[in-house]
Length: 178
Image (tube, rainbow, N blue to C red):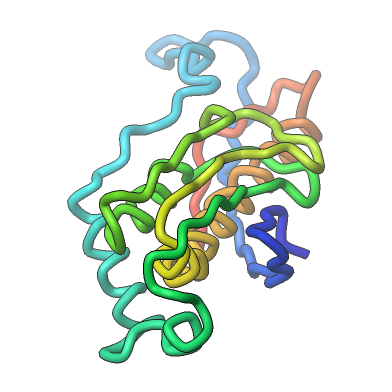
């Protein structure tokens, strides 16, 4: 099951994670400890992210847009939505999700309620989003796809890190394949 809930969504995401492990037995000549990078979150290259967002929105909405929403939601209707954790997860990707919503309508307000890297318990409201209902509904699938993937990878990496707690083995990096 997906760790993220948008309104009443229950779509699942498939996560494939490969973790690279290095066993560290104390300090060695020429090597440096990575403890200072323990919780470092790399900066996001938004130029590349924006390209991916544009491709995903194009694939999802095509030339016609969200026809169901256009047919049943009145133009000008405002709405408020929340991104809520359905299960324990590590928050990752809120800035990307915010950009998806902004790409469809700059008037959408996206308020992150947690920080990247936070461990969220079931029921945690991760973000509140408000704006035109049509734009919220058109953006939600693409935003959730990114958020579910990123939270899934971060959560899996966290579980491996927890399993290695108290050992000399450190996770130095993670990679995912899709």
